[in-house]
Length: 434
Ligand SMILES: *Cc1c(COP(=O)(O)O)cnc(C)c1O
Ligand SMILES: [Zn+2]
Image (cartoon, rainbow, N blue to C red; front, side, top):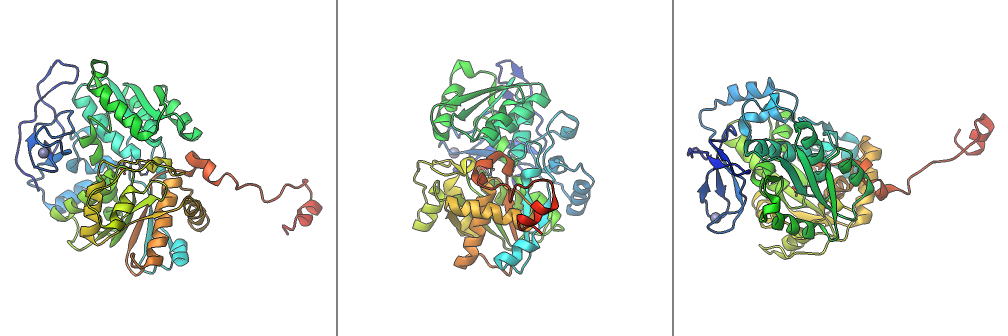
Protein backbone atom coordinates (compact mmCIF):
# COMPACT_ATOMS: atom_id res chain seq x y z
CA UNK A 1 0.00 0.00 0.00
CA UNK A 2 1.28 3.48 -0.84
CA UNK A 3 2.46 5.25 2.28
CA UNK A 4 4.62 7.96 0.76
CA UNK A 5 3.30 11.38 1.70
CA UNK A 6 3.19 14.02 -0.99
CA UNK A 7 2.36 17.64 -0.35
CA UNK A 8 -1.17 17.96 -1.60
CA UNK A 9 -1.42 21.44 -3.03
CA UNK A 10 -2.96 22.50 -6.28
CA UNK A 11 -4.14 25.57 -8.10
CA UNK A 12 -7.90 25.91 -7.88
CA UNK A 13 -9.98 25.33 -10.96
CA UNK A 14 -11.19 28.90 -10.96
CA UNK A 15 -7.62 30.13 -11.22
CA UNK A 16 -7.30 31.70 -7.75
CA UNK A 17 -4.80 30.18 -5.34
CA UNK A 18 -6.07 27.29 -3.21
CA UNK A 19 -3.57 26.65 -0.41
CA UNK A 20 -4.27 22.93 0.02
CA UNK A 21 -6.88 20.27 -0.45
CA UNK A 22 -8.06 17.95 2.27
CA UNK A 23 -9.16 14.69 0.72
CA UNK A 24 -8.54 12.49 3.73
CA UNK A 25 -6.17 9.57 3.13
CA UNK A 26 -5.61 10.51 -0.54
CA UNK A 27 -1.91 11.40 -0.72
CA UNK A 28 -1.25 11.98 -4.40
CA UNK A 29 -2.16 10.96 -7.93
CA UNK A 30 -0.09 8.17 -9.37
CA UNK A 31 0.18 6.95 -12.95
CA UNK A 32 -1.15 3.48 -13.47
CA UNK A 33 1.39 2.81 -16.23
CA UNK A 34 4.68 4.40 -15.10
CA UNK A 35 4.09 5.23 -11.43
CA UNK A 36 4.86 8.94 -11.88
CA UNK A 37 3.33 10.87 -8.96
CA UNK A 38 1.77 14.33 -8.98
CA UNK A 39 -0.04 16.34 -6.29
CA UNK A 40 -3.81 15.97 -5.98
CA UNK A 41 -5.56 18.11 -8.57
CA UNK A 42 -8.17 18.03 -11.34
CA UNK A 43 -6.01 16.07 -13.77
CA UNK A 44 -6.52 12.60 -15.16
CA UNK A 45 -3.66 11.77 -17.52
CA UNK A 46 0.05 11.35 -16.80
CA UNK A 47 2.25 14.10 -18.28
CA UNK A 48 5.03 11.55 -18.81
CA UNK A 49 3.22 8.75 -20.64
CA UNK A 50 -0.50 9.75 -20.94
CA UNK A 51 -1.43 6.79 -18.73
CA UNK A 52 -4.45 7.15 -16.42
CA UNK A 53 -3.84 8.70 -13.00
CA UNK A 54 -5.31 7.10 -9.91
CA UNK A 55 -5.35 7.92 -6.22
CA UNK A 56 -2.44 6.81 -4.05
CA UNK A 57 -3.32 6.61 -0.37
CA UNK A 58 -1.62 6.83 2.95
CA UNK A 59 -3.32 4.01 4.87
CA UNK A 60 -0.57 3.70 7.47
CA UNK A 61 -1.38 3.30 11.14
CA UNK A 62 -4.68 1.39 10.87
CA UNK A 63 -5.38 -1.42 13.31
CA UNK A 64 -7.76 -3.85 11.53
CA UNK A 65 -10.02 -4.46 14.56
CA UNK A 66 -10.27 -0.77 15.29
CA UNK A 67 -10.94 0.13 11.67
CA UNK A 68 -13.63 -2.53 11.37
CA UNK A 69 -15.36 -1.21 14.50
CA UNK A 70 -15.16 2.35 13.24
CA UNK A 71 -16.70 1.38 9.90
CA UNK A 72 -19.50 -0.59 11.56
CA UNK A 73 -20.35 2.42 13.75
CA UNK A 74 -20.49 4.72 10.69
CA UNK A 75 -23.51 5.94 8.72
CA UNK A 76 -25.60 3.53 6.60
CA UNK A 77 -24.11 4.86 3.36
CA UNK A 78 -20.74 4.93 1.60
CA UNK A 79 -19.31 7.41 4.11
CA UNK A 80 -18.87 4.59 6.61
CA UNK A 81 -15.77 3.88 4.46
CA UNK A 82 -14.53 7.50 4.54
CA UNK A 83 -11.13 6.42 6.01
CA UNK A 84 -10.54 4.49 2.75
CA UNK A 85 -11.81 7.13 0.29
CA UNK A 86 -10.49 10.42 -1.16
CA UNK A 87 -12.81 12.55 0.98
CA UNK A 88 -12.39 14.77 4.04
CA UNK A 89 -13.02 13.10 7.41
CA UNK A 90 -16.15 15.21 8.00
CA UNK A 91 -17.65 14.28 4.62
CA UNK A 92 -20.88 12.97 6.14
CA UNK A 93 -21.79 16.44 7.45
CA UNK A 94 -21.78 18.06 3.98
CA UNK A 95 -24.74 18.12 1.60
CA UNK A 96 -24.33 15.08 -0.65
CA UNK A 97 -26.72 12.42 -1.90
CA UNK A 98 -25.24 9.81 0.49
CA UNK A 99 -25.58 6.70 -1.66
CA UNK A 100 -24.66 3.14 -0.85
CA UNK A 101 -25.28 0.48 1.79
CA UNK A 102 -27.68 -1.07 -0.69
CA UNK A 103 -29.10 -4.53 -0.15
CA UNK A 104 -27.14 -7.70 -0.69
CA UNK A 105 -30.02 -10.03 -1.47
CA UNK A 106 -29.60 -13.76 -0.89
CA UNK A 107 -31.09 -15.10 -4.14
CA UNK A 108 -32.06 -18.71 -3.34
CA UNK A 109 -34.81 -18.92 -5.98
CA UNK A 110 -32.51 -17.71 -8.72
CA UNK A 111 -29.79 -20.01 -7.41
CA UNK A 112 -32.13 -22.99 -7.83
CA UNK A 113 -32.94 -22.01 -11.43
CA UNK A 114 -29.27 -21.55 -12.28
CA UNK A 115 -28.05 -24.56 -10.33
CA UNK A 116 -25.87 -22.54 -7.96
CA UNK A 117 -25.29 -24.42 -4.71
CA UNK A 118 -22.53 -22.34 -3.11
CA UNK A 119 -24.73 -19.35 -2.26
CA UNK A 120 -25.90 -16.72 -4.76
CA UNK A 121 -26.35 -13.04 -3.93
CA UNK A 122 -27.56 -10.03 -5.88
CA UNK A 123 -26.00 -6.71 -4.88
CA UNK A 124 -28.93 -4.48 -5.73
CA UNK A 125 -27.74 -0.97 -6.53
CA UNK A 126 -31.12 0.08 -7.89
CA UNK A 127 -31.70 1.19 -4.28
CA UNK A 128 -29.44 4.23 -4.62
CA UNK A 129 -30.88 7.79 -4.58
CA UNK A 130 -31.14 8.07 -8.38
CA UNK A 131 -31.59 4.33 -8.84
CA UNK A 132 -28.23 3.33 -10.21
CA UNK A 133 -24.69 2.60 -9.07
CA UNK A 134 -23.59 5.96 -10.53
CA UNK A 135 -24.53 7.77 -7.30
CA UNK A 136 -21.49 6.14 -5.67
CA UNK A 137 -19.00 7.60 -8.11
CA UNK A 138 -20.68 11.00 -8.39
CA UNK A 139 -20.73 11.43 -4.60
CA UNK A 140 -16.91 11.10 -4.65
CA UNK A 141 -16.50 13.46 -7.60
CA UNK A 142 -18.68 16.05 -5.85
CA UNK A 143 -16.29 16.14 -2.88
CA UNK A 144 -13.34 16.60 -5.25
CA UNK A 145 -15.22 19.33 -7.14
CA UNK A 146 -15.77 21.16 -3.86
CA UNK A 147 -12.12 20.76 -2.87
CA UNK A 148 -10.91 22.18 -6.20
CA UNK A 149 -13.37 25.08 -6.23
CA UNK A 150 -15.41 24.07 -9.27
CA UNK A 151 -18.76 25.83 -9.71
CA UNK A 152 -20.33 23.67 -12.44
CA UNK A 153 -20.70 19.90 -12.24
CA UNK A 154 -20.76 18.17 -15.61
CA UNK A 155 -20.33 14.84 -17.36
CA UNK A 156 -20.70 12.85 -20.52
CA UNK A 157 -23.30 10.21 -19.84
CA UNK A 158 -24.94 7.09 -21.21
CA UNK A 159 -27.94 8.08 -19.07
CA UNK A 160 -27.60 7.07 -15.44
CA UNK A 161 -24.68 9.38 -14.79
CA UNK A 162 -26.67 12.39 -15.99
CA UNK A 163 -29.33 11.84 -13.33
CA UNK A 164 -26.78 11.24 -10.61
CA UNK A 165 -24.88 14.44 -11.47
CA UNK A 166 -28.11 16.47 -11.64
CA UNK A 167 -29.20 15.26 -8.22
CA UNK A 168 -25.81 15.70 -6.56
CA UNK A 169 -25.37 19.23 -7.94
CA UNK A 170 -28.87 20.15 -6.78
CA UNK A 171 -28.11 18.97 -3.23
CA UNK A 172 -24.78 20.77 -3.17
CA UNK A 173 -26.11 24.01 -4.65
CA UNK A 174 -23.88 23.83 -7.73
CA UNK A 175 -24.83 24.46 -11.34
CA UNK A 176 -25.01 21.31 -13.47
CA UNK A 177 -24.76 20.92 -17.22
CA UNK A 178 -24.60 17.40 -18.60
CA UNK A 179 -24.18 15.95 -22.09
CA UNK A 180 -25.92 12.83 -23.39
CA UNK A 181 -26.43 11.11 -26.75
CA UNK A 182 -29.66 12.58 -28.18
CA UNK A 183 -31.41 9.18 -28.52
CA UNK A 184 -31.44 7.89 -24.92
CA UNK A 185 -34.33 6.11 -23.20
CA UNK A 186 -37.04 8.57 -22.15
CA UNK A 187 -36.91 7.42 -18.52
CA UNK A 188 -33.29 8.45 -18.28
CA UNK A 189 -33.82 11.78 -20.03
CA UNK A 190 -36.71 12.75 -17.74
CA UNK A 191 -34.79 11.61 -14.69
CA UNK A 192 -31.76 13.66 -15.70
CA UNK A 193 -33.78 16.79 -16.48
CA UNK A 194 -36.02 16.88 -13.42
CA UNK A 195 -33.30 18.12 -11.06
CA UNK A 196 -33.30 21.47 -12.85
CA UNK A 197 -29.81 21.47 -14.34
CA UNK A 198 -29.02 21.90 -18.01
CA UNK A 199 -29.26 18.78 -20.17
CA UNK A 200 -27.75 18.82 -23.64
CA UNK A 201 -28.36 16.16 -26.30
CA UNK A 202 -25.44 15.59 -28.65
CA UNK A 203 -25.99 14.30 -32.17
CA UNK A 204 -23.78 11.24 -31.91
CA UNK A 205 -23.10 8.23 -29.71
CA UNK A 206 -21.49 8.16 -26.26
CA UNK A 207 -17.97 8.11 -27.64
CA UNK A 208 -18.76 11.31 -29.61
CA UNK A 209 -20.17 12.92 -26.46
CA UNK A 210 -17.02 11.99 -24.53
CA UNK A 211 -14.75 13.43 -27.20
CA UNK A 212 -16.72 16.68 -27.16
CA UNK A 213 -16.35 16.95 -23.36
CA UNK A 214 -12.58 16.50 -23.58
CA UNK A 215 -12.50 19.38 -26.07
CA UNK A 216 -14.58 21.57 -23.76
CA UNK A 217 -12.20 20.96 -20.85
CA UNK A 218 -9.28 22.24 -22.90
CA UNK A 219 -11.20 25.40 -23.86
CA UNK A 220 -11.69 28.61 -21.82
CA UNK A 221 -15.46 27.93 -22.08
CA UNK A 222 -14.94 24.96 -19.75
CA UNK A 223 -13.20 26.90 -16.98
CA UNK A 224 -14.59 26.14 -13.53
CA UNK A 225 -16.25 22.97 -14.85
CA UNK A 226 -15.75 19.70 -13.04
CA UNK A 227 -16.48 16.80 -15.40
CA UNK A 228 -17.01 13.96 -12.98
CA UNK A 229 -15.83 11.29 -15.42
CA UNK A 230 -13.11 13.29 -17.19
CA UNK A 231 -11.03 15.79 -15.19
CA UNK A 232 -12.36 14.42 -11.87
CA UNK A 233 -12.11 10.81 -13.06
CA UNK A 234 -9.45 9.63 -10.58
CA UNK A 235 -11.71 10.67 -7.67
CA UNK A 236 -14.96 9.54 -9.33
CA UNK A 237 -13.57 6.09 -10.06
CA UNK A 238 -12.79 5.41 -6.39
CA UNK A 239 -16.52 5.38 -5.64
CA UNK A 240 -16.76 1.91 -7.16
CA UNK A 241 -14.51 0.54 -4.43
CA UNK A 242 -17.43 0.94 -2.04
CA UNK A 243 -19.25 -1.89 -3.85
CA UNK A 244 -16.38 -4.21 -2.91
CA UNK A 245 -16.30 -2.94 0.69
CA UNK A 246 -20.05 -3.35 1.15
CA UNK A 247 -20.22 -6.82 -0.37
CA UNK A 248 -17.46 -8.07 1.95
CA UNK A 249 -18.87 -6.39 5.05
CA UNK A 250 -22.37 -7.69 4.25
CA UNK A 251 -20.96 -11.21 3.86
CA UNK A 252 -19.56 -10.86 7.39
CA UNK A 253 -16.15 -9.42 6.40
CA UNK A 254 -15.54 -12.19 3.92
CA UNK A 255 -14.47 -12.13 0.27
CA UNK A 256 -16.93 -13.62 -2.23
CA UNK A 257 -15.42 -16.44 -4.31
CA UNK A 258 -16.82 -15.08 -7.57
CA UNK A 259 -18.27 -11.75 -8.59
CA UNK A 260 -19.98 -10.83 -11.88
CA UNK A 261 -19.60 -7.16 -12.85
CA UNK A 262 -21.00 -5.24 -15.86
CA UNK A 263 -18.53 -3.43 -18.12
CA UNK A 264 -19.08 -0.05 -19.76
CA UNK A 265 -15.75 1.81 -19.52
CA UNK A 266 -14.50 -0.97 -17.24
CA UNK A 267 -13.82 1.45 -14.40
CA UNK A 268 -16.24 -0.20 -11.97
CA UNK A 269 -14.69 -3.62 -12.46
CA UNK A 270 -11.11 -2.41 -11.99
CA UNK A 271 -12.00 -0.49 -8.83
CA UNK A 272 -13.91 -3.41 -7.33
CA UNK A 273 -10.68 -5.36 -7.70
CA UNK A 274 -8.75 -2.48 -6.12
CA UNK A 275 -11.23 -2.37 -3.22
CA UNK A 276 -10.94 -6.10 -2.58
CA UNK A 277 -7.13 -5.93 -2.59
CA UNK A 278 -7.19 -3.01 -0.14
CA UNK A 279 -9.38 -4.96 2.28
CA UNK A 280 -6.89 -7.83 2.13
CA UNK A 281 -3.88 -5.54 2.60
CA UNK A 282 -5.53 -3.74 5.52
CA UNK A 283 -6.28 -7.08 7.18
CA UNK A 284 -10.06 -6.51 7.13
CA UNK A 285 -10.71 -9.78 5.29
CA UNK A 286 -8.84 -13.04 5.03
CA UNK A 287 -6.45 -13.26 2.08
CA UNK A 288 -7.89 -15.91 -0.22
CA UNK A 289 -8.45 -16.10 -3.97
CA UNK A 290 -11.45 -14.49 -5.67
CA UNK A 291 -12.47 -14.44 -9.31
CA UNK A 292 -13.82 -11.42 -11.16
CA UNK A 293 -16.02 -11.93 -14.23
CA UNK A 294 -16.91 -9.15 -16.69
CA UNK A 295 -20.28 -8.91 -18.46
CA UNK A 296 -21.15 -7.16 -21.72
CA UNK A 297 -23.97 -7.10 -24.25
CA UNK A 298 -23.06 -8.73 -27.55
CA UNK A 299 -23.98 -5.50 -29.39
CA UNK A 300 -21.21 -3.71 -27.51
CA UNK A 301 -18.66 -6.32 -26.51
CA UNK A 302 -15.19 -4.95 -27.26
CA UNK A 303 -13.71 -6.32 -24.02
CA UNK A 304 -15.38 -9.71 -24.29
CA UNK A 305 -14.21 -10.02 -27.91
CA UNK A 306 -10.62 -9.19 -26.92
CA UNK A 307 -10.78 -11.64 -24.01
CA UNK A 308 -11.96 -14.48 -26.24
CA UNK A 309 -9.36 -13.69 -28.90
CA UNK A 310 -6.58 -13.70 -26.31
CA UNK A 311 -5.68 -10.05 -27.04
CA UNK A 312 -4.21 -7.55 -24.55
CA UNK A 313 -5.68 -4.55 -26.33
CA UNK A 314 -9.31 -3.74 -27.05
CA UNK A 315 -10.47 -2.92 -30.55
CA UNK A 316 -13.25 -0.24 -30.49
CA UNK A 317 -16.76 -1.18 -31.68
CA UNK A 318 -19.80 0.80 -32.78
CA UNK A 319 -22.41 -0.05 -30.10
CA UNK A 320 -25.82 -1.41 -31.00
CA UNK A 321 -27.65 -2.86 -28.01
CA UNK A 322 -30.59 -2.21 -25.70
CA UNK A 323 -28.11 -2.11 -22.79
CA UNK A 324 -27.40 1.56 -23.42
CA UNK A 325 -25.89 2.23 -20.00
CA UNK A 326 -23.09 -0.15 -20.99
CA UNK A 327 -22.77 1.04 -24.59
CA UNK A 328 -19.22 2.35 -24.58
CA UNK A 329 -17.52 1.18 -27.76
CA UNK A 330 -14.05 2.35 -26.74
CA UNK A 331 -13.72 1.47 -23.05
CA UNK A 332 -10.88 3.35 -21.33
CA UNK A 333 -10.20 0.61 -18.77
CA UNK A 334 -10.59 -2.29 -21.21
CA UNK A 335 -6.98 -3.56 -21.03
CA UNK A 336 -7.02 -3.47 -17.21
CA UNK A 337 -10.25 -5.47 -17.18
CA UNK A 338 -8.62 -8.14 -19.37
CA UNK A 339 -5.70 -8.23 -16.99
CA UNK A 340 -7.89 -8.64 -13.89
CA UNK A 341 -10.13 -11.32 -15.42
CA UNK A 342 -7.04 -13.33 -16.43
CA UNK A 343 -5.10 -12.74 -13.20
CA UNK A 344 -7.99 -13.75 -10.91
CA UNK A 345 -9.10 -16.73 -13.01
CA UNK A 346 -12.34 -15.08 -14.07
CA UNK A 347 -13.56 -14.47 -17.63
CA UNK A 348 -15.36 -11.91 -19.80
CA UNK A 349 -18.55 -12.99 -21.56
CA UNK A 350 -21.41 -11.40 -23.49
CA UNK A 351 -25.09 -12.11 -24.17
CA UNK A 352 -27.53 -11.12 -26.90
CA UNK A 353 -30.26 -8.54 -26.38
CA UNK A 354 -32.85 -11.35 -26.27
CA UNK A 355 -30.89 -13.02 -23.50
CA UNK A 356 -30.73 -9.68 -21.66
CA UNK A 357 -34.52 -9.42 -21.75
CA UNK A 358 -34.93 -13.05 -20.67
CA UNK A 359 -32.58 -12.44 -17.75
CA UNK A 360 -34.45 -9.30 -16.65
CA UNK A 361 -37.62 -11.41 -16.51
CA UNK A 362 -35.83 -14.28 -14.76
CA UNK A 363 -34.51 -12.04 -11.97
CA UNK A 364 -37.88 -10.33 -11.57
CA UNK A 365 -39.88 -13.57 -11.38
CA UNK A 366 -37.44 -15.38 -9.07
CA UNK A 367 -36.36 -12.63 -6.68
CA UNK A 368 -38.77 -9.69 -7.10
CA UNK A 369 -35.98 -7.46 -8.38
CA UNK A 370 -36.68 -5.39 -11.49
CA UNK A 371 -33.31 -4.69 -13.09
CA UNK A 372 -32.44 -2.33 -15.88
CA UNK A 373 -30.82 -3.78 -18.98
CA UNK A 374 -27.35 -3.70 -17.34
CA UNK A 375 -28.69 -6.06 -14.65
CA UNK A 376 -30.08 -8.26 -17.42
CA UNK A 377 -26.56 -8.39 -18.84
CA UNK A 378 -24.96 -9.58 -15.58
CA UNK A 379 -27.65 -12.14 -14.80
CA UNK A 380 -27.66 -13.38 -18.41
CA UNK A 381 -23.88 -13.65 -18.44
CA UNK A 382 -23.89 -15.48 -15.09
CA UNK A 383 -26.26 -18.06 -16.58
CA UNK A 384 -24.06 -18.44 -19.65
CA UNK A 385 -20.85 -18.72 -17.60
CA UNK A 386 -22.38 -21.55 -15.57
CA UNK A 387 -23.51 -23.34 -18.73
CA UNK A 388 -20.00 -22.94 -20.22
CA UNK A 389 -18.38 -24.23 -17.04
CA UNK A 390 -16.44 -20.97 -16.48
CA UNK A 391 -18.25 -20.11 -13.26
CA UNK A 392 -18.25 -22.70 -10.47
CA UNK A 393 -21.79 -23.16 -9.10
CA UNK A 394 -20.42 -24.63 -5.88
CA UNK A 395 -18.78 -21.32 -4.89
CA UNK A 396 -20.21 -18.19 -3.29
CA UNK A 397 -21.20 -15.87 -6.12
CA UNK A 398 -22.27 -12.23 -6.14
CA UNK A 399 -24.00 -10.73 -9.19
CA UNK A 400 -24.33 -6.96 -9.51
CA UNK A 401 -27.55 -5.27 -10.47
CA UNK A 402 -26.46 -1.71 -11.13
CA UNK A 403 -29.71 -0.05 -12.16
CA UNK A 404 -33.50 0.09 -11.99
CA UNK A 405 -35.85 -1.48 -14.54
CA UNK A 406 -38.15 1.54 -14.42
CA UNK A 407 -35.52 3.44 -16.41
CA UNK A 408 -35.49 0.92 -19.29
CA UNK A 409 -39.18 -0.04 -19.52
CA UNK A 410 -38.95 -0.42 -23.31
CA UNK A 411 -36.89 -3.59 -22.88
CA UNK A 412 -39.92 -5.42 -21.45
CA UNK A 413 -42.66 -3.24 -22.93
CA UNK A 414 -44.58 -6.23 -24.30
CA UNK A 415 -45.34 -7.25 -20.71
CA UNK A 416 -48.86 -6.27 -19.75
CA UNK A 417 -52.26 -7.25 -18.45
CA UNK A 418 -53.12 -10.92 -18.07
CA UNK A 419 -56.78 -10.13 -18.84
CA UNK A 420 -59.27 -7.28 -18.78
CA UNK A 421 -62.57 -8.23 -17.16
CA UNK A 422 -65.84 -6.64 -16.04
CA UNK A 423 -66.00 -6.14 -12.23
CA UNK A 424 -67.96 -9.34 -11.51
CA UNK A 425 -67.20 -12.99 -10.68
CA UNK A 426 -68.68 -14.41 -13.89
CA UNK A 427 -66.31 -12.37 -15.93
CA UNK A 428 -63.44 -13.46 -13.66
CA UNK A 429 -64.34 -17.14 -14.18
CA UNK A 430 -64.82 -16.70 -17.95
CA UNK A 431 -61.27 -15.36 -18.18
CA UNK A 432 -60.03 -18.61 -16.65
CA UNK A 433 -58.60 -16.95 -13.55
CA UNK A 434 -60.42 -18.99 -10.90
C1 LIG B 1 -22.10 3.23 -15.74
C2 LIG B 1 -22.73 1.97 -15.44
C3 LIG B 1 -22.01 0.79 -15.23
C4 LIG B 1 -20.50 0.61 -15.27
O1 LIG B 1 -19.78 1.57 -15.84
P1 LIG B 1 -18.18 1.55 -15.96
O2 LIG B 1 -17.94 2.64 -16.93
O3 LIG B 1 -17.76 0.22 -16.47
O4 LIG B 1 -17.63 1.85 -14.62
C5 LIG B 1 -22.72 -0.34 -14.90
N1 LIG B 1 -24.07 -0.33 -14.82
C6 LIG B 1 -24.79 0.78 -15.01
C7 LIG B 1 -26.27 0.69 -14.89
C8 LIG B 1 -24.16 1.97 -15.32
O5 LIG B 1 -24.91 3.06 -15.50
ZN1 LIG C 1 2.80 7.68 -16.65
